[in-house]
Amino acid sequence: MRLLFVFIDGVGLGEHKDSNPFVYTDTPGLSKLLGGNNLVSSTVNYQDSKVSVLGLDAKLGIIGLPQSATGQTTIFTGENAAAFLGRHLRGFPNLSLRNLIAEKTLFKQLKNKGYRVAFANAYRPKFFELLSRGLPGCRYSCSTLATFYGGLSFYNLYDIIARKALYMDITNERLQHLNVKVPILTPDEGAVQLLNINRNFDFCLFEYFLSDITGHRADHKEASCIVKVLDSFISGLAERIKPNEEMLIVTSDHGNIEDVTGQNHTLNLVPLLMVGAPGLREHLAKKLNSLCDLLPAVKEVLAAPAVQKSSEKEDSF
Image 1 (tube, rainbow, N blue to C red):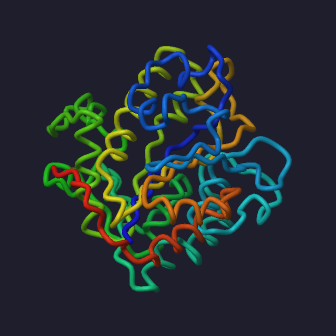
Image 2 (cartoon, helix red, strand yellow):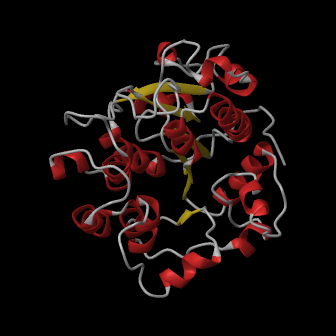
């Protein structure tokens, strides 16, 4: 079965409060997907014929606020990176985590099992200058390092135009502000483009990180704008998933944007949304408790056979 894995940086399951942009922002797409509920802590364990919502522990058994470098390394290697270091590490992976990613990147693990894999994010030209020198320095995201050490090709801006990749903001607005000539997409159009990319692979990863950046700014209005993009994007993906053939997983590494009263990460559980075959979702839900459990779940989804098609008409686009 194909798997589309959407990683959204810095989103936790907050409370139903006015300080939570998933509450004070109108989210019609998520509300419809979640049976009228908001994406908040009280929605954990919600399940219907289309979606399952779980909460994952991002603390990883280590005291302190969960951080990006250790949380993402855990997701992309299946190893408890915080326990490996003995602490949470913010920002970018240090040499120890970089070596761990080089050894156990999910892309390498999945390729070794014969799966076709891709990282759908496109990069700007400056990045390829660094890539030609083997990514010197230490300020690279876990996803970039996982792709590099996994031996995958990186997509460029031309791949966006060819609909083979998606920029990190989904809509290309950031690129247009830099005078890059690429088409503006709505979040829903971005969802269509990503799903079409996904259907050329067994496993496809996409990363969105503006949510974490905005969370650190604690900007009430900006956080609402981010949530509106995510609402349309996630619901657009969920509406078009073919549950007999593929699954959508959406998750995060730590909390942040769900509480705009402060600029730090939170201790909240992070959301795990699964859209796909109900039986497989129910089976996986029993095993998913922390970030460490994500990669084993990915492998189970990929190993699962496509199920017999129902008589329901599938969406086409």
